Length: 267
Image (cartoon, rainbow, N blue to C red; front, side):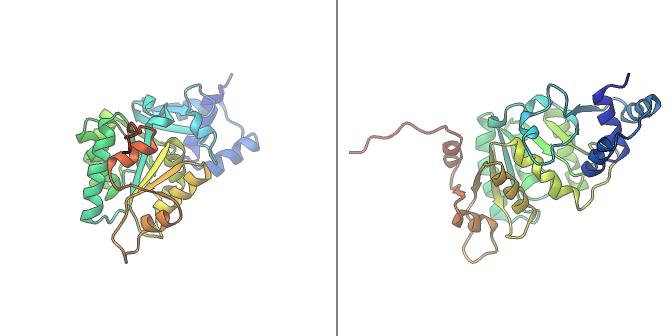
């Protein structure tokens, strides 16, 4: 008898992780034979996966819009078990020296406190956040917009290998799936759902970071932003004007996370 999780895996492999096609196949009760199941499992080989019906599937993802039916991963899956210990740090691919410097400062501090840092493993702010996490001895999680065995961009391959070894690589796209422009904004909903706080390190007003923020707001997540110099095309400044938390120093992040300092006496 076919098992539910094996059916989900087979559909994910057949349709390359395309959520709409997978759901459509389930709704029409698409026929799958035992040989179809075995072929999908053989294609995956030693690859690891978790399905929506598994006990260890993250609760945070079940409560989101279009939860992934199947997640492929490499590394320590337990890193995303506790939503209140996960922080997404996102931002521009074309980061400025200022953005990179502040990212390193902020991420190093929170990683040393045991918080798990999530990024999309893009170049720029994402790459700096991931690298700073690992350098601080912290744990990094990268959510990919490609198959779990495909590193994009290729310039991030050294980081990809380090995260696979010391953190967690996560994707709803099975092995072999090439990156596509539509994958990345859709991927951002996972970053938003898995984290208790989303920090925008630097971004322009029209950017993928705005998509992540919109997903996060829909899930009532807190948004923190690094302020940017005036007169610039800054999503951070715009969000701060709209009510996002201004992050000026690591202590501001800890305040948002509930690590408030003892109230000082006022004389």
